Length: 446
Ligand SMILES: Cc1ncc(COP(=O)(O)O)c(C=O)c1O
Image (cartoon, rainbow, N blue to C red):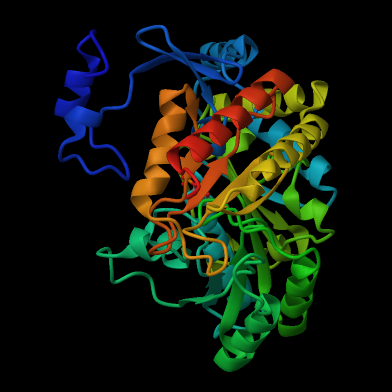
């Protein structure tokens, strides 16, 4: 039992944890965490652990930012809440800031989670198509191995079998094509998208949704020209491009937005996580101006977006989000993430000599290590061996992630996504711990 304070007992009695089999949980309860600073968390016994996954890939500016706590306190004292049907400065300022950073005209719709941001993107895509005269365009094409959230629409777009099993029937109108997987497949994923659009009939397809780099599905980095080709396919067929940057926006890949790295602009963009670095539950959907304009009309024509969230555009969350971005700019975190990511990737690639390390990949500070039984056939390493590596890292004071409940048999990719403030010594501690865990827990046969 991890805690002497009784918290672990209370937790076991009261909380239902996500992605967790509760049977036998008592024996493997995670430690009670009481505080965080920078890239470190501290548990109830005072032990510090390096958080190599930024919580859930979201604490981009690192833990313990008093400045963000001050902004939240001030905003709560001044104006704790207003629905987004009203006007208030924090939401307006943050929306304006995001559009400045994006460099195009559009409109921002705030939500509290990435799942909700994707839900609104799907509704906007369908309503847009209907209102420009294509009511038959309702299908959303997504990709196998992608994750877009846990609400039923977002889950229907998700391409991870184990996340969906048992929750059907899911929403109709979602279908999936392959994502590029440079390590495992030489199929042309962009061509497959175009084939799917043609097979379904473009006049039935509303939108295509993709993560720039599939994160939870295994850190799948696309070929450099993939996004540009996808943009071309969407344009040719009148399909809206939704880029899900819930993980990748706000610095994770070393740029404000990942699509900027690939020279492509989405029609609809979703972001979350790094938007407020996890200090507040905040996410958003950004529509380009041409999409927004299709919603103009008289009120009784019902052309407006008929969607609301109680906490969308929350004053405290948006005030914190704005300051979070100011911190990123002031501390050059985009540039620092690029450099830190390149250095960490280079350091981890030393592991490629190990027989169970099939591939080391990533961009910025979103990195994956694909573990295999052996290199020739690339058979994914078994779950128990992967768990041993992750457990050893945790035992040695470093939290690393792994693909979980994604594609059956592919729980074999270690995921590293540390806060963007990762220093050189911390990076070395992270890499050395992962290296030791792999070399000692997966000893090469003589
Ligand atoms: C790419 C992507 N989209 C959407 C989501 C859903 O975001 P949330 O958990 O905030 O609903 C996630 C969550 O991990 C994600 O990785």
